[in-house]
Length: 134
Image: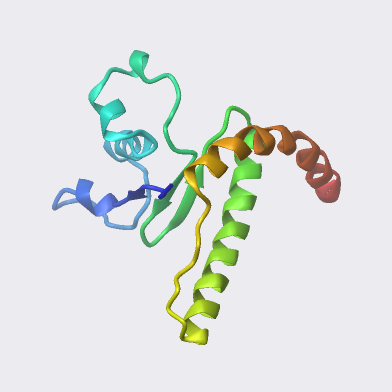
């Protein structure tokens, strides 16, 4: 599943400071809508109680994650960064090998079947991380 990309330049007006910050209401609304599919964007907020995506990439800025709690959002952020490093390494190794077979990504069924497992793991990770920072 591809993460959506929020392109803030689509929302700039000619007089805006173009510093990539989501610091205006229209930017915030557009950014929040990035977590929804186009079908949910067309419906009302009451019809779309949960976002379709947990991660949104921000061109030139990084990424943002969401969760039902701060520990869950942090867990998703940490693992998104780690997974991005693994993916970048896999692509680099594949390119260096010259085999052009591509990288095999997680399948939709694997994603669905591991979602509950991942969501059950973050409370334990949060306790460890919180202990590390004191």
